Image 1 (cartoon, rainbow, N blue to C red):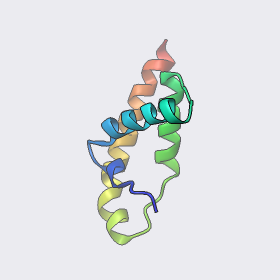
Image 2 (tube, rainbow, N blue to C red; image 1 turned 90 degrees about the vertical axis):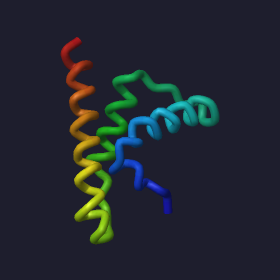
Image 3 (cartoon, helix red, strand yellow; image 1 turned 120 degrees about the vertical axis):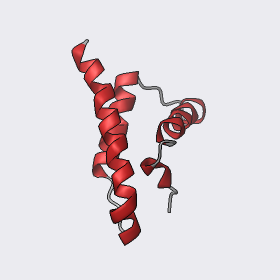
Image 4 (tube, one colour; image 1 turned 30 degrees about the horizontal axis):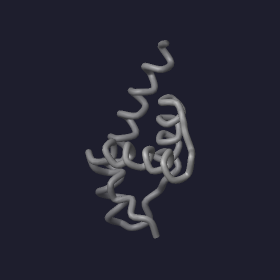
Length: 79
């Protein structure tokens, strides 16, 4: 089971930066900034915590991070 606790914390943005770099170096997967944010938006929208703790506590931080990603994407939609 992957450790995805970070999606509910402010560290989400740092960790997703590291993941993007890992994909580039080891998987040869390169994305534009907009594509990367869209991938993260989709992941956050489709992820569902299963434990009571996740649903009651971690979901709040995840929704905050989703909102931030959506705000970032508005920048790309304005260009």
